[in-house]
Length: 137
Image 1 (cartoon, one colour):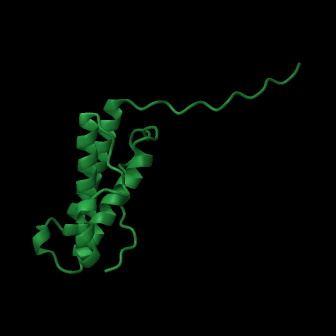
Image 2: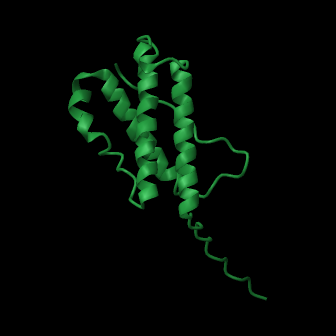
């Protein structure tokens, strides 16, 4: 008896719009939780210089993921990570807080591209964590 040829790998199952929205909402909720931890639940206007970069990073992530969630609800594509926040680019050139904000938003959208398009994690797995990239002041 001849061995059967191995079957081709199964294609990744398509993710439904509902699943996509749920995963976008979960990613945004995780970013908001990270922002709350970074700020110590204080107003962003009152943070110390030590807390500010981490908080601005997570604030950018929350904003970008909110934009992605609104786009998905309208049936539009998510924002392109490379161009998200382009309106703030001039400010980011001179203000480290804006630079960190843009990096946080763009990092979140980059992670989103892999997280949302991948199959759902098994039940009980934690929501994706948003860790700041190395940021210079």
